[in-house]
Length: 285
Image (cartoon, rainbow, N blue to C red; front, side, top):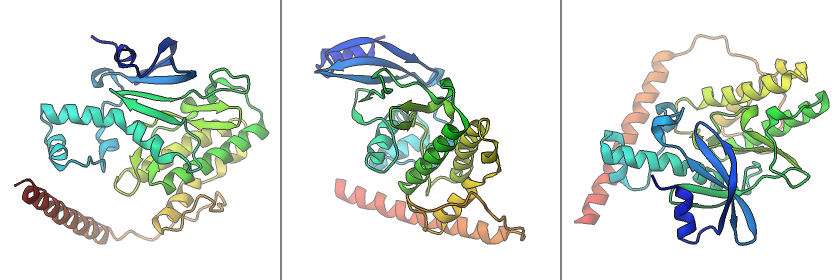
């Protein structure tokens, strides 16, 4: 099996492989040199040995621009499975480019080439590869500051219609300026994924539980509900002021009404898709 980094070397995309930085269940990270810059190169592992394995909960709502490819992906045939695999691998690069300049601190993407993501190497104050948050001892004031920073970043991410979906102390790096969020191949589109709130709530709860070990008062907050309510009502902004408090509605839900809205939305989506398919077919004739 050809090493993807050898392909980048052969094509002149990188000049040298400096060594392995990290091995994980989803991907391996290596240090590479491109000109004078030292970058992180992320090589994704095959679907058969990844823990996510293109989980349907994360794939829901993801679409590719080519409608024929999308139909093949939906059908589950060999070509569709291969296309889904490539879409999964490129999703992190897409998310990073989408978040550049948004207020979310992520590694700056350089390029996605032949299934390899080249990106900025996140460094600590001494210029070394930044540690994960789980590997750093923190005191209560630092925990409160990190928590506020990460909640703000989750809000900024949601303002870009993205939810990390697997955020925890294991995929936050601490660079010289604060927390940097990494590992986004499973990031979901908030507006088109029915599991979006559950994933946002899990992300918030993971960070709350970890920072709450050092600052127990954080465990009393309910930012996920407050953030989601603002998002649903289109009032969420990167600078939205939150309280961490939320009053839950105890009235009985109108299940039939909700199901009717879902069905109407599904039918409308099908009508739009048929229109796009007919337009594409007419254009190709």
